[in-house]
Image (cartoon, rainbow, N blue to C red):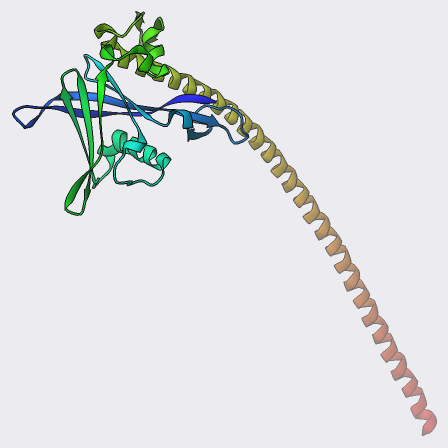
Length: 286
C-alpha cells in the first residue's frame, strides 16, 4: 500500500539578501513528506507506525512544505540533484536529507549548514557541508508559493488539502473552507490544514494504540491471574510432595531403626548362647 508519510516538522529562520548581506526576516515552519510503500511483517497493509517503510520508486522525492504564517511554499528534493555523492544510494541520500532538514538543529557538532533565503514569492534552500577546511554545496532548490504553482504539479496530499471541504475541530476550534484553485487565501491556510490532517491522523492512531493497550493490559491481567493460579497449584503440589516424601522417609527410617535393634538383639542372644555353651564345656573338660 502506498501512503504519504510526514517525517516531522522543524522551526527555521528565513533570511533575505539585503545589500549582499543575509538578514533574518523571521521564523518559519518546514515539514517533509514522502510517498512510502507500507507493509507489515506478513506482507499486509499496515499503518506507517506499525509496518515497514520503503521509498516508492515511482515518486522518489522528498516533498517540502513550508509556511511563514502568511503563505505556504512547496518544492521537492530530487536525490539525483545531490552533489558529491555524499550518501551512497538514492534511498540513503533521501533518509539522510530528511534527517538534515528536520532534525539538523538537534544534531550536535553537525557538519551541515542550511540556509533559507526569501526571494520574490519563494524560498531558496541551500544545504552545504563542512569538509576539512572547505564548505561544499550539497543541494540547492527553491520552494514556490502554492498560489503561484500549477495545481497539477502539486502532490496529491497537498492538492487534497486545498480542494477538500474540511470541517475539523481541535480544542473546540472549528475550521471549514473550500478552495477550487490555489490562491493567496488558500496559500495562507494550507500548511495549517495540512498539519491539522496529520494531527487528526495521529489522534486516531493514538486512540487505536490506547485501545490496543487496554486489550494488552486485559490480556496481561488474565495471564497474570493464570500464572498466579499455576504458581499456587505448584506450591500446593510441591508442599504435598514434600510432605509425602517426609512421611515415607520417616517410615523407612523407623523400619531401619527397628531392624537394627532386632539385629542387635539377635547378636546379643547369639553371644549369650555361645558363652553359655562354653561354660558347659569347661566343667566337662576338667
